[in-house]
Length: 630
Image (cartoon, rainbow, N blue to C red; front, side, top):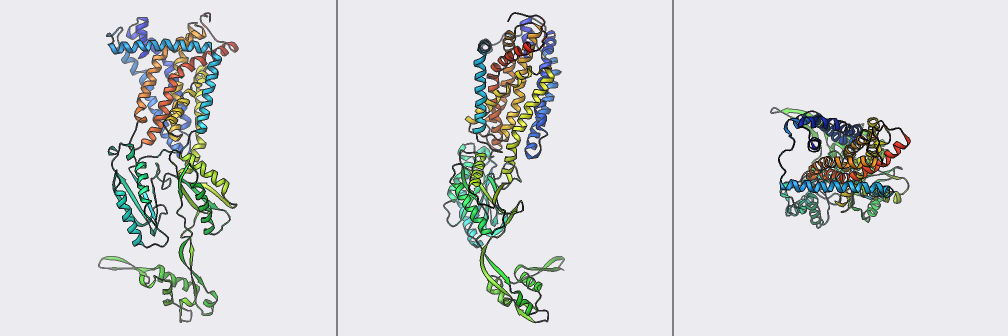
């Protein structure tokens, strides 16, 4: 549309003739731009794993939309332009005249700036190198993460009392906690379950869980009413409750990746030592982690000091009394744990039959003295004469990870630090302090974050490589595509810089935005390079004249493409409510990347093209229709 308007105004063509000529000029760039975007997203859709699934959804969605847009640009849009557009047209209004005036001044200023940068080519290349160094610096020093935290509208509270605390005591603590939570602004309701540990995923009389439901997002637009802000204030209140460990946390953005959004470390004992030794090493590791500024707090649900009753068999006595060993086990199971017998039907309903002592007859270890076991000769032998009972401390359960006894350490990054920084800090502490025979691994969301971090550079490199190889095939040259692909660093610089000043981190959605910038930046660069190449080879303009003229001719088209995209992502940058973390992450990178690619790219592309075109003509044969003096 922009090219048709320009041809009607500059060459006094009819709408039909202008449309035909415009399509002759822009069909190549349109197809090249679309195919470049396909080349960018092709490798992305083939990535494996959870990270690959996220990229695939993004890549397939954009690929389909690009295909539809390209077909529309080559068919319906030119037809509508020939039918609806007319030469001359109505006189533009005051505001439009002022806009055109300033745009013409900006175009002239851009041409002068490009000319100056070409004359100072060495300084321009030094400035470009400084930008590359800045990109590397930001890439290494910016915080990293996997998925941004989301305001899901609720969060969880896990309550743990001392080992073997009664359920009645747990219920009282839970009621006190509920009353405190309901006083907080933004909380709508609380659901509790005394006797169940959400983090331990097991029933326990000394544990309880709460689900804190918040008001609707439309009623929590203030930053102080964001889920993390409310959870922080709730945690401060709950810390006042004595004799209980209370932890507030929220679920990860993707289900089935753990119970909370913090990091998840597995401490493993490779030598098979006691649970008490494993717990001691874990406590020491967490104590050191708590002193690191990047880690807010750490915790584990592993306990090696749970009061337990140890039953040892007197095997010699069992043998001398002619008692079967299996009978001893069966007696203990029946009286204490219960034994299923069968079913019976009565009044049209089925009932299960279990054998077990009454609760008051199995509440103390001394009750075992009233149990008897039958020997093989029919005598009843007191059970307490065949066993030895000791009160000990031990672990309720010992988990295994990678076949080793392990405990899980959860942690949360401190305010101002990303999950990647917290994970790096925890890994550094573990590497320097774990004794011999212990090692660690990551699980849940943290494991996926580590995998994504390793795959991101490969994915970005493949996107750049596929784009470059396609452009090489398009232009049948190894040099000209470099002028297009070297515009990508301007977008990367803008994306990282904007993400940094907005307080974001480099997460998977930031990486998605960076991949998109490869295609969008190449698309804008193609508009300039294609016209510069055309002016040089068919009209015989000098290299500098071709570069400057192409930049000025396509500046309006580049602005139209860029600012329609930039304005389209503004809602992502200022997003609030459900899913705002992902939307902001994409918005930060794409907004800053496209803005920088537009402002800096219009300067970098013609300068780089001039340098490379001179090299191309010096070392290779280029067909020039009419040669002008440079």
